[in-house]
Length: 186
Image 1 (cartoon, rainbow, N blue to C red):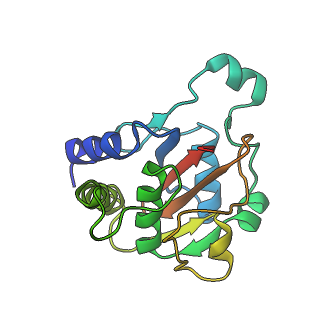
Image 2 (image 1 turned 90 degrees about the vertical axis):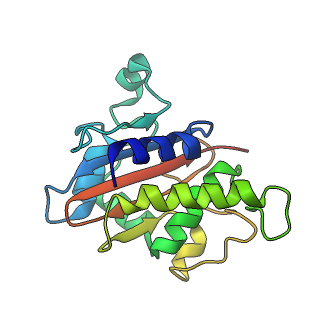
């Protein structure tokens, strides 16, 4: 994995999506504290790689708080709203973000090649974090299983932002945490 490949994949996958994608260092024994640091914009990417953040309005952050567009998060808030998902589910969630939270094209669909490219980009993004990762999402289907059926897209979430709708996931490795979030496509 190198910076160019990662950044190109992140732009192809998420540049046209109202999204947030940032990585921070693992500095605490509880990964939630590291995720909070990313959500609160307290840390920079440990490798200096790009961050995708549509909410760069400093005035809005001054008014709504440093975590905007996320509600002021807490470790307890994350514990209540994030559920374990498999890395394959995290990959699928990244691709689902690019399809306005709806169904991703399947075999024989016109956009099958575009979906295959999106999956390749999602794998590139997740490969940054290595093989020993844990993933957590706020989608409601993850409450029942770490491998929910996303064939129809994402249809429920426990909000972490100030918007009507948001879903995403965090990826936790021994060295870094990544936060990938999509906001209100409806």
